[in-house]
Length: 379
Ligand code: UD1
Ligand code: UDP
Image (cartoon, rainbow, N blue to C red; front, side):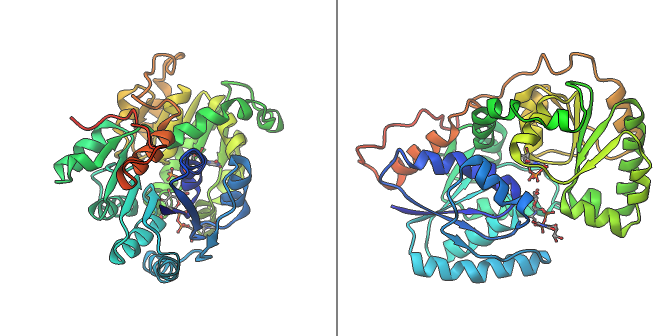
């Protein structure tokens, strides 16, 4: 069975890495890796392939940046040629980025079944481009792999066939658990003169936060306060760097002595930074999950989350973007706030193994290698 796998943007790389590795133990499945080129800077793409041992993509569409319509359309045009040429038996997509929906749509229109890893997550906020991508991708998905029970409930509520929905755990956490020891060898804390538990981490890239001048200014107000109390390290996403420059906010940040603005860092350094932090402030999806496993308190700078299990586990608080609320949450953090966090079910490092076995069971029944997978069916 020939299965094409899509990556495009930074969070896709951590998700595909364990899946590409797991294919090696299922010879019935022949994977092909396609990079759309949605992210292309060395520090947003190639660095992750090297650090995570992801095979070089068989095909790179080289699409790059653009408006939503342009980027989605360019990926679709380029990827249609790939599907026609390769004639895959299935397409596997991860997450919720434009590459996910663009390639999924091309495949199903050509009669290729679609497999979605991290299916069913819903923020309930349709102003988020990712929420549109999630809803549309799941509407055309044939086989769903879910990270948490809430995602299964969403899919069942939307009318999807429960026999196609599988609770497998979290591939992003497979990558975290596999690389944590390597990450602990990173020298990044020394390089940045940061002490264990003696700093905060900030990441921002959601358009609702960084493309809106008033919101971005309010977020900087809260960062200004926090950096007076605790050093804040801010690996800056290219979208955010561009917006800060356009808005003339760079000088304001430079005047904050406790704020360390750095380029995006590779996965191992970032994992080290996260693991040693006293608190993480972020609007990222994946970082809400990683902090849950690392038991580091996370203040999510959004009004909602598509990952409610991270809140239930006790590590994550949804604090919005109002400076007063962010500062109140920051000041109320108990000294040992991470230590009592729970671990979400099946976030155990084996999600990718379950996924490839279920794919083989579903599309290559009777295969000798396709042992029954220890994943749960929705109740
Ligand atoms: C995308 C995803 C978002 C994900 C994020 C992860 C969509 C709709 N958005 O957002 O869900 O959370 O990636 O990081 O798919 N740029 C560079 N170099 C790069 C990549 C981007 O300079 O390698 C700049 C370009 O100016 C570009 C902007 O960043 O226009 C935004 O990139 P884009 O991929 O469109 O969206 P992200 O904000 O990165
Ligand atoms: N990450 C990284 N370097 C950075 C910032 C983030 O390696 O400088 C990793 C982070 O650990 C997580 C992923 O990138 O694995 C999250 O990507 P991002 O926040 O861009 O996207 P989202 O998860 O919000 O879609």
